[in-house]
Image 1: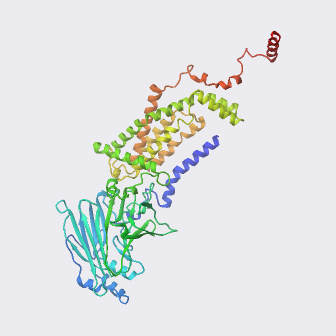
Image 2: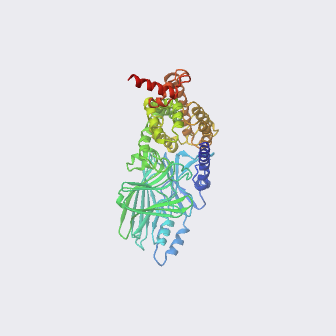
Length: 598
């Protein structure tokens, strides 16, 4: 028994300490820098680019020279490359967006209200800065690489009907136009920005283009921290019909293709995302997700092309994964926040509990304006809600502890007769009204709540850069001075010492090692999550103290019910008291005397 316990603890601690190391080796550690953050992405604009915040127009001669045919496509491409790139800047209270006239694509998308979690905090950048991959809104024509390359490099004619977006001028339009009189090809992209939204209305109008046309969501567009994937899935996700899929390509299958009416297509990480939302799912007939490099994924969806005019309309959302904002689209985008995660995959019972809990947490925050205080109050409320279940659990465990002596005697007596042992134990439990699983069942019923709260505190963007007190300025990252993890370990140790248990004494001693292992594990967890755990442990210790002192005080020596724990069925098996044992001859004499009287 002791060897098995020791082996169990060694394996458990090995998993606890080795898990984080394994994540780092595989590239999924929450603290492994992503390729985006590692690059110097916040550099000054490169030479050869001009920026403007007002209406701008491309050189008409460049547009005329950017013609394409099977004979002169290479020459046309070279003519386009030498043209100077022009950057159009759009600023709202929420975002700062840069659009390039070359390819009519998005080259930068900064979130003003969200800063990087680095020493030098700068606005979060959603666009992956790497010139070898096409930017968001680039068009791709499968099997016609020369057309794709030409439209990627071609300067479009640009029209912009606003200089600033605000309450008095809430919407603004940017129109990119390319037209070739020689080939009859034309592409027109219209983007409508809103001053109070992360969403952009998009219209793509094409004529005389190849039929197989993909509009690209871009490469890692919306993936800011690839490493933050302890829970949930990073990379691509989509909804075809009514089914949501979260799947990213891997080395053995670097390209994923799906056909069907596309409700939405997204690239996401823990806190941010970009997503295409067609106005009519039938207009998008397929999608792809492709692994470009390690932790670098591109995605796009197929729309109608051809010689005749085709019009695609939809929306592009690029911003934080805020539950209310995503839910307002009413197409299931809020489910990209995986509230139902548990071990592997998503569980409906956990998700069903998590959403109401999240609403309560934000309701408390509306009054406290401090998510740390809100977490403490929510934990207290949950603890009070489960007081009846905890009472039943404590009562059952105390009852089991009271009859532990008779149980041990029965186990020794019937160690060679399992069936008889089970029968006698059932009689013993029934006699004393004790349920052997009564201590576990209440805990089992509370598990969905604990897991749901764990998910909420780990993955919701509401806690990102939310301060608590003193040294804790961000509840979404680890405690910089490890105070909360240490308090968690100490409180767990105290909790184990005072909790009633029927386990083997050797196992109880060995389990005291567990708080040490969990302390090292929780060092890497977000401060908000550890705060919840510490609060829950302190409340459990307080509840146990009150229960032991005032509600269910343990029986005093000499007044315990242990004397009553002998099963009636075992009375005949009890040995007579010393001095009163009768010999077999006395018993036989008494029997013969009775027979004579008869």
